[in-house]
Image (tube, rainbow, N blue to C red; front, side, top):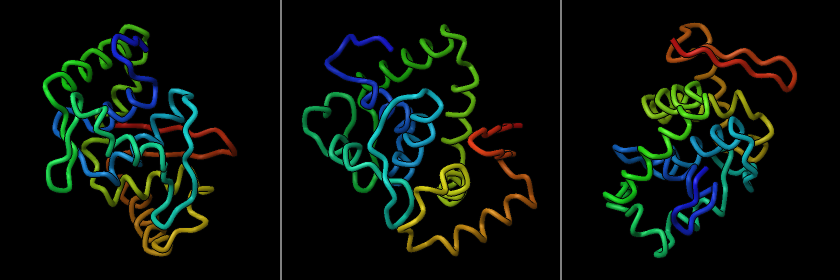
Length: 166
């Protein structure tokens, strides 16, 4: 991805995860997890109380050096005008690189409830759930979503994952 500012790929993932409407920390963490796997970008995501968590993402969300791209209002992160400009530029770059599917997945992730997004990451990345304090509840949600086929259809075969977005 282009590096017009002093940002790296993880910063770009965070900006994409915040989105043009803003998001809370949990949703940003889970979206970064999915995007990092899709785009093959190395992150320090590890098992935590609520599933996959990155200390680096948390630090960057609270870093003053990123304040010209996003800010925290109450419990939600929002992109600044410069952040939105970069967000749309990143979407265009993904499309230009024939990664429209990643843009579609990102759009679906933004539309998902926090509960469904957490369930998706638990299903896709079970290795991040070993320390989870909510695993039992999330597994019930996963089973419910499988029955309904809501928001997305996911199939896992070994390390291969297929996501269908209607």
